[in-house]
Amino acid sequence: MFRPRFLPDNFTLALVATVALASVWPARGALGADFETLTAVAIGLLFFLHGAKLSREAIIAGATHWRLHLLVLASTFVLFPVLGLALKPLLAPLVTPQLYLGVLFLCMLPATVQSAIAFTSIARGNVAAAVCSASASTLIGIFITPVLVSLFVVPHRAGAASAWSSIGHIMLQLMAPFVAGQLLRGWIHPWLARHGGALKFVDQGSILLVVYTAFSAAVVQGLWKQVSFSSLAGLLGVCAVLLALMLGLTGWSARRLGFTKEDEITIVFCGSKKSLASGIPMAKVLFASGAVGAVVLPLMLFHQIQLMVCAVLARRYARRAHAASAQDAVVTPLR
Image 1 (cartoon, helix red, strand yellow):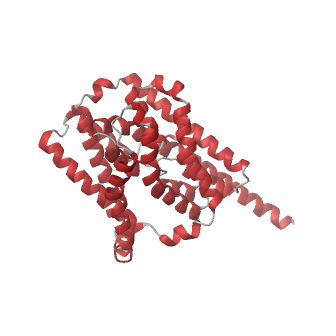
Image 2 (cartoon, helix red, strand yellow; image 1 turned 90 degrees about the vertical axis):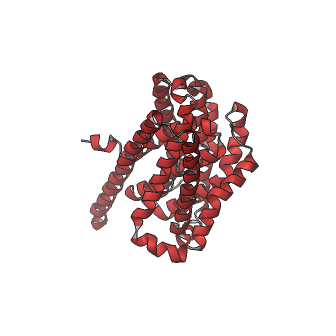
Image 3 (cartoon, helix red, strand yellow; image 1 turned 180 degrees about the horizontal axis):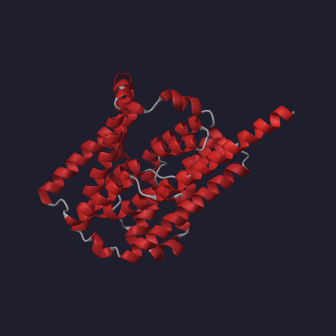
């Protein structure tokens, strides 16, 4: 009955096909350099269009709920990294050093925007707060993620750049196009509203391009000789453990702090998810080209797991909300 919910979506299948293509036919030499340039242009276009799409009114409407946003940001940029570091004795033996590095990078990324909002809406949570919180996480992550990587990843010798250098690169490659999109939103947003598929095409196409370029460089340097099937199986377990802990801790924290059920839903879906759309471009900027493939592999796997699990969880929340509404409808006339 529930099996279709656990089947991978078309984009996940496209990611798997892209990794397979890069493994069989990696871009080398001049072709690899051309793909690097094309990837940089695609990422800039992606963040430009996201800047044009993001509603400032929605952000302002949700910005007043500071307690909720503070908890989401703390979950994303404090609790997640603490778990990744504190669980090293448990997690590191299950994967290779490079994959554990990718797990740490995953823990330091901002929350996803689109799916967090979509799941919050399905579960009948506080959608306005979700828009604000997820968007703020993305923007703040542009500054916080490079700092966290510099503090906790550089000691692992992964080829990460310094924090200030990384922030500079991200500001130029990601933030500048985003701000340009915001400034031109009045002219571009009506076109985006009529052609919503264009943003989806650029969004998914740029990620596939980055994945192909990153895995090509990694394959050329011997990625699949370093990553065994047992390491991949261990990585699956690591991602599942992290997601389960974060879903449990965000829900428990929201209830302990007295948030409403609608706010709890928002906190769970915004505080436990990580952004593939932001993470892969950031990895491209923050890490040496040969290390990117292994670094983003945990993120790609975590992304699919979070989509499948949160889809089921959102429907469960929605059923509870529907049952509560039906109960209120029965009780109210009796009063």
